[in-house]
Image (cartoon, rainbow, N blue to C red; front, side, top):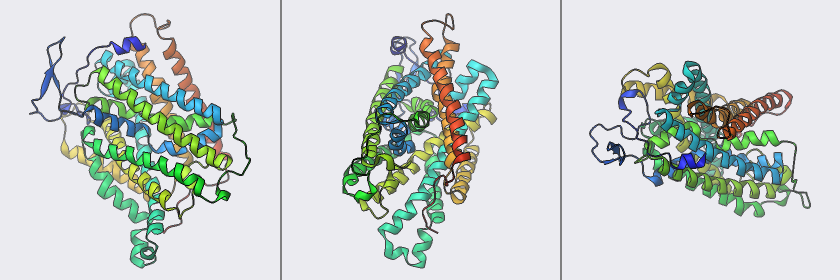
Amino acid sequence: MDGSIEHAGHFRLRNMDAAGSSFSADHSRDRTDHVYDRESDTPVHTGGASMISSFFNLTNAIVGAGVIGLPYAIRQAGFIIGVLMIIVLALLVDWTLRVLALNSKLSGQQTYQGLVEHCFGRTGLLANSFFQGAMAGGGMASFIVIVGDTLPHVLFALMPSVGQTGFGQFVFSRRFVIAFFVIFMAYPLSLYRDVGKLSKTSAFAVVAMCTIIASVIIEGPRIDPELRAERGSPVVLANTGVFQAVGIITFAFVCHHNSFMIYGSLRKPTLNRYFEVIHISTVIATVASLIIAIIGYIYFREKTQGNILNNFPQDNLLINIARSLFALNMITTFPMETLVAREVIDQLMFRNQEFSMKRHVIITTVLCALCLVVGETVCNLGVLLELTGGLSASFLAFILPPACYIKLCSGPKLSWKTVPHWLCICFGFTVMVLSTVLSIRHAVVSQEANGSCWNVQ
């Protein structure tokens, strides 16, 4: 399979301005910087994002909100099993991202929805749109909730004297902070049609995540010993929560619903160039994930919480900086999910219509407004997001890409060539069903609230 991918040749993206799609990098009709494909002698646009910009975008998409839950995944699965699962799932994500790009070349489709409809018709399109929209919408809402749950606490801790005034209590309140960041940061960034323009914010997000990892490493040994793992507590090598851990790791790594837009934004979008971006981004994301997962678990072990930053005291300066950077990271990741959600709506409702800036702004405004309402009224999406994210992530990453390849490839559908794809589909369905069942079970039997807001009015 890898050999066929590596020599798959060149894939030319056409201008998508009038197709109702929101992700074309070359949406300017008067752009003239072109190179020519050697085989077809056809012009290919070169005005999109550079390799570095695409690397930052994809790395940011992979190393997202789920990374701070990886130490908890290690606790659930056990040290050895958890580490192996992170590595294996990272390799699987790398492979399925490349399979997805190859499917795009084989089908001539340049959106996830278009690919699935080409392979499985209208039914496949509706199913993909549901899971893709749920994944993107759930991500948007969760990012806003994270901002509301972290930044008010950080602001009060950094400026306690201001927080004691009436003005400070209003400005530092959860409601005001969420509204400010959605209206003045997330919304303007979400209006971009070209994901390549978000490379600078994605670069910041990658740097912010590195800072968060460094703060956990530095502050872990320095906090009150009572907050860390008890002296002599064992490092559990294997545990019973394997499938729960798979759901956490899958949510952390899956970015397939963003991949077409990143591919489309790449300057000279050949398969080889895109595969290089995938490999580098996956390696960096895996290394960062292993560091925070292993270090976080070793420090806290049986006390490891779902959000590793919550293991630290609320008055820790460096951790509060990390919390604020994490919140800002969510704001810079938010537009990537908005682009996906907007594309789903465009493909379902306006696919045969010319691009309209008015419609573009209205859809973006509605999406951001809905997330603002969620953020203002819900402290934590809890099991609902766990259920939606786990269900959608498994379907989009481990089921659809190999299923589309089997549909598109020549020759018998059951052969040695397609064995890895069938195995991946079986794995995806297993994870999806078990993750859903366990999430529902957790929601029913758990007596504690699924997350909570900071005690800030």
